[in-house]
Length: 279
Image (tube, rainbow, N blue to C red; front, side, top):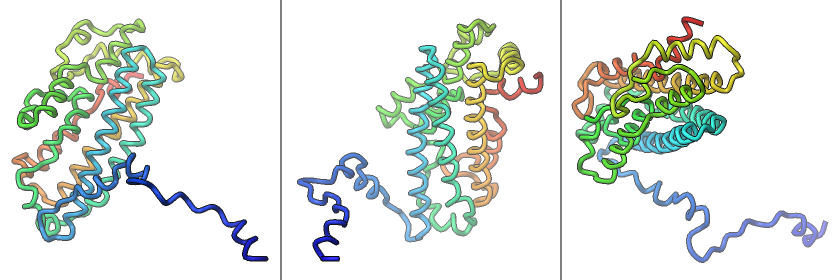
């Protein structure tokens, strides 16, 4: 075969010559992302801790976007759109939970080698994670306090505190669809932590005792998938922390493992779990 024929058969090379940065860089901003890592110790293990934490923050951002999309769709009675957003968030939660793998087997000595670099820093100070918790109904005005020095972040959190949670929007939808949700639940102060209701449990019991293909029953299962993975996230966090530092006081002055154990015992969307005992 002639050289000319060979050249004719070869696929065209991708376009390489751009006037400025590449379109990929313009869209992804990879140069910004890959230069945000400023370690504070000489330990080589600090880099994976820092990058993993930054990756978690990005997943928090995506998941908040999905749950806000779902909440808005529920307000507009677009249940299929909400279910789609919840299903996407399930895959994203799986990726988020996998972020613990690089950190899950840290020994105390390995963690101590760069722990001092964190100073008073702690994951509970994450504003985006706090927005996730607020969307789940875990509201607490005191959690705004650490962010008083960042006006934009504080304003976003304050707005989220006073907005209905994802579950509030679900219960309002159930009421509009003819299910008996107590008035006290519908008109509650949404800036406070959601507390379980026996009447709401009865609503879910009735839905789960009926047609499993019903739109609201499918919504309940999508929410349960989310709740299960949030529980797994909390437990993976607990196990990783217990392995790396035992029962010592956590960074930022938290109670460490004791605080995480308390969090891991809480069910997200509680009546979705308790109703199953009555079906």
